Amino acid sequence: MAGTAIITGSSRGIGAAIAKRLAKDGYNIVINDVSQEILDAAGKEVAEECRSFGVEAECYAADVSDYAQCEGLVKWVKERFGTIDVLLNAAGGNMPGATIAPDKTVLDLDVDAFKKVVDLNLFGTILPTMAFVDVMAKNKKGVIVNFCSESALRPLTRVVGYGSAKAAIANYTRYMATELATKFSPELRVNAIVPGFLLTNQNRALLTNPDGSYTDRAKTIIAHTPCGRFAEPEELFGTIHYLISDASSFVTGALSVVDGGFDAFSI
Image 1 (cartoon, rainbow, N blue to C red):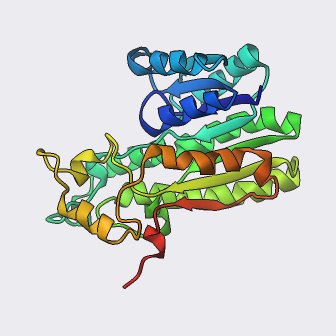
Image 2 (image 1 turned 60 degrees about the vertical axis):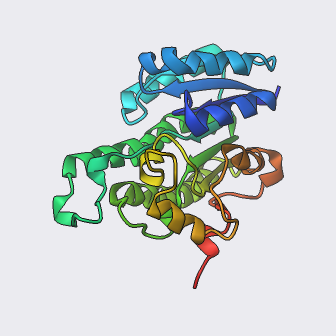
Image 3 (image 1 turned 135 degrees about the horizontal axis):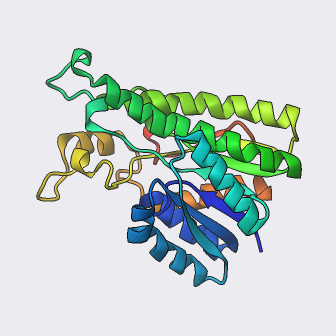
């Protein structure tokens, strides 16, 4: 058995796809989402698919932007699986109020929505990391992979709240890589994956029209992506596998970009 992996925000979307892939690779899986209702609607089905690969898979509801709930998640994982080997901080998202439309300015920004997006993305990464580090530190080994964004590497229009939070995650990833390796164990590694643009439920309204055709923003993104298309979730699997395996035993504090060349493009 490869070990036990927890993926936050994994009942749907990219997180669910990664959970199923890691199960196929032999990991026991903990599927987490913010509420039991979401897990009942989608997470349990993901768990069943994971079990079809002969591993154990369980669901646990916890809001990872709430430290007390993160502590409850840690306690449950220790009781159920004994330890934790891999933490993937995949929980995240955006809100319309934390964006600035072309016909609006920063003066129209919904500050409460901005704070909620920062809570979900940034503190939804910091707090589960803090909670699980205690377990990993005692084992002197563990891998944490945070989920960053293209908007962390360069400021993208509209998504000011999301981009600010993801940029902070990039900094936090590098800070924690040094913190954990020097104060606990060099086998405690922290890296981040930086996915390119995928069509997800989160951004579909921004990138597609009601008839399914691409919006002007989507066309601009593809025009600035040398590979000429959006990414597929499956194209993240290789990098995830590398970051959590011994193949990357000398890699920590890295931002692994999987973006079809978007960040390298210039005119």
